[in-house]
Length: 332
Image 1 (spheres, rainbow, N blue to C red):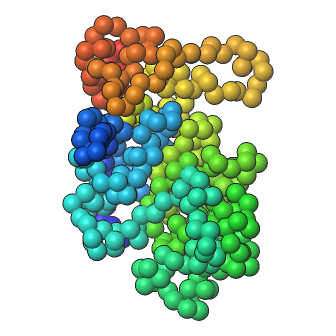
Image 2 (cartoon, one colour):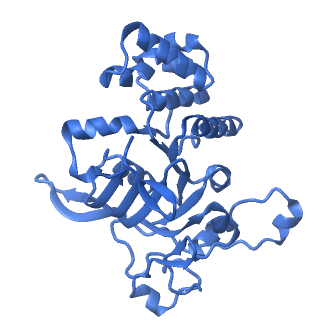
Image 3 (cartoon, rainbow, N blue to C red):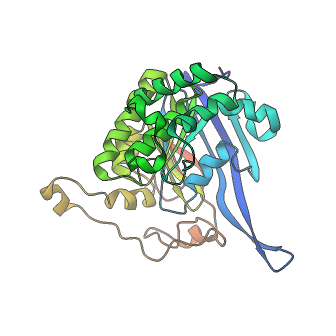
């Protein structure tokens, strides 16, 4: 098991420091670089062992890129990702391959993330063979146990992805992620492609597996209601930056950043009287391009509170209340 950092009596499994991931924009025959897409732009956070840390925000804000860069599926432009005491950005090859056993990912689309030419048994069992964990009969028994653990019958091992529903495919993806007994699982919008009736089943499965196996989740989503149900702490992203971060109850009960307030005002409340009295915050304009983000505070072009200084100065990332961080100079 990875050596853990300690912070305020909590064990830190993952520590992200000043993470940056820019993608080059190229043109012409010689692929000349003419710009950069600032997908993730200098973010820092920690994930404690055994918790569910969620990242929320609009499509294109950098949530998925953050998760993939954390796992080194994308190598960062700069910054550091510590898993226990190991800086993942400094290792490669076989050393990084060994670390992959401790970190896995559940992908967003259960239709494209499973090889249609492989049986479910081979899909789930492939990590076991690649890392020399089990072969032959032992692998077969291991796969059957994993399928049962995620709520599927053993006979699914002989099926192919096209013979399964969306919810069943996502359970296969979960079983594959669990095969190596990882410590961290990045859940990249694991329910967004599923029917509403199936979403709650998958989330409840993730919660029960976390309790049973001591898992730590980075949960990436845009469904704020589901995030409230599953999360311990929540980070709100906007245009490649984290603008607010705190415990779930603080973010939902006492949001500080104007962008967080706007997001939460759009979440419907299942009470007609309360819903009728709520005030919606409508954001003006379009989401700016990460290839050409605004100067100063990236949110100032859509913020009703913005003053002239917001377009000139990058807001400080500060702890306004205990364990409640926000990037806005106008809130107190």
